[in-house]
Image 1 (tube, protein in one colour):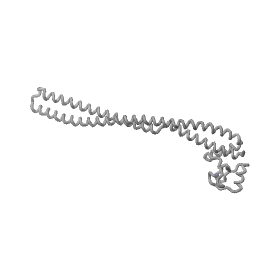
Image 2 (cartoon, rainbow, N blue to C red; image 1 turned 90 degrees about the vertical axis):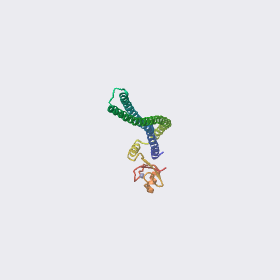
Image 3 (cartoon, rainbow, N blue to C red; image 1 turned 30 degrees about the horizontal axis):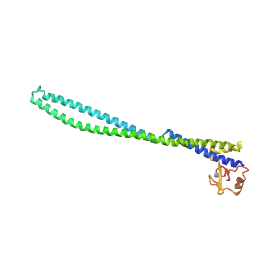
Image 4 (tube, rainbow, N blue to C red; image 1 turned 180 degrees about the vertical axis):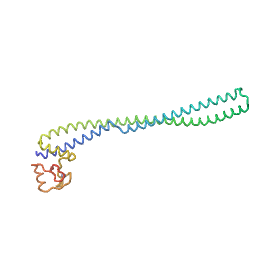
Length: 233
Ligand SMILES: [Zn+2]
């Protein structure tokens, strides 16, 4: 068996190993970082902030309403307490009381709005919590599929590495060295097969003499354009 054929086989195996390694990396990234869960978490965080803000605005307006009610109660007590006899003073108190009543009415409208806003924010918060639970469930389902794929890939990796070890038996140390250096400088592809009389990687057409030497397999022939080892299938 010619060394060129073994180098070509090694190339195929290494390409496969590269694909397996790339996919395993993707899976590990997907497992450690699920976009849907992160998105649902950020929606929930915003909903929590909105609900807290609505809640404290409601508290504030409730306190205001209570204060003004108390104030009006005091005014009413003074008005009907019988201690104040001066008609001008009584008239002023009456006006104060009416003004307070109008103010309280306005505040109560605001209070109602704040209550609605707070209830809406609470509902949105509940929805966001449910959405996060769902996103986590979906991620777990997908992760189960990904974990299955990972196991299969790891088995394929072990099998391919055994094939590689067997193939390496038929390659000399010097050729292996050449091959490894080419892999580093040629984007992982050191061996190019010949298709339609030319290099399958860069497309360079070859002279009949070159084609003949590649076919004989007695020595390594390099593509005159891209410099890869040529192989004739
Ligand atoms: Zn080429």
